[in-house]
Length: 423
Image (cartoon, rainbow, N blue to C red; front, side, top):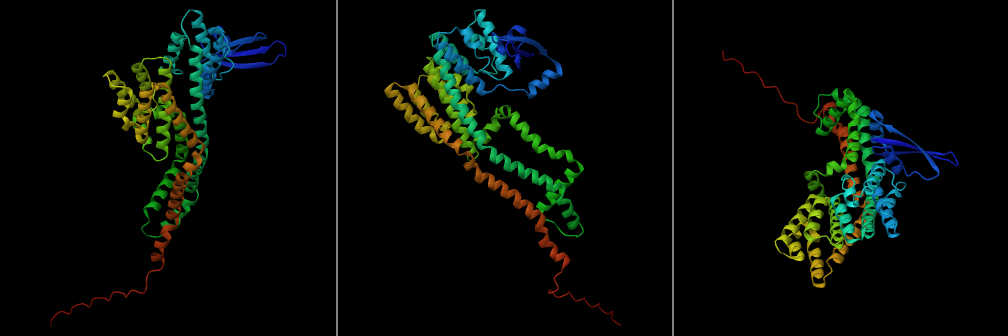
């Protein structure tokens, strides 16, 4: 249930409306971050209004997670109580979901629950890796340090994601314009071309027939012109669900350029997760299981799952990695070499962090140059689209010359004389 809290400053009279995703007015006030000099009025939003607010409002994001854990870590480091540490983050997060989560966790903590137990009710916000880290931090008395590690790791991921999104703007605009031009020509130029070419009984190229068929469909069913743009919106909105499909993941990782980015980002997240779990003194087999479950790509889920099986069979970590190094692509042997050094020096956690740092540095470099990397692909796609349109429209002209101006240089066939009947 959504709650709209209107906060009014008693000194200035200024009002601020805050949305909180919770079930009681008391929790809504906590999630809204009501200050001592503010009065509050709470109303419930239900039915169609709630559906509209959820569809158009601010969604839970990685920014909120970074802000939450960074703030909690700072407060706990200053010996502020755990409940107060969470309540102080209500004004740092932006989405109603995170505000409601803070209120709910504060309520559960006041009833004596542990932080990890309270957070386990929000699986959509915190995965198994985060919950395992928090649980390990509680048991070791290092919750502040663990929260800081989570914030730092997610902050690096957030920086790279932002660069990737920024780099995708240019290719997206160019390809969107290409689709728009095709649709516009289907309504304007192609029908006139069809009238011209239709008056001649000549065979047309396949590209011309295709673009004319597309024009007929759009003219008779113009609402279909919105389908490409609706599809793009759906892909962006539902990308996380689409990417969760194994077939989609396996297809994308084999694409040039895009596959490199996917492989390095999945490796960076997975190795960072494993390093933090082992640094928090989580058992190796448990850390590998959690890393496998939380890995963002099916190849890395399979890889860490196999590593865990080898460890349980008695193999050392470098040996297990060497047996399954083919899952890591071209970097497999290099990573195995680093882990061999860690086995000799006893610094597995430091080496895993080094691997994650290397992947993040490479991904950061790629993210900063993503527009230059994708520019040739964008130009190629645009060239194919433009070339196809030009050929479809002007290609038949060369064939129509034979219809309009027949070749007179060839000798006309002579009529065969009729055979005379014998007298």
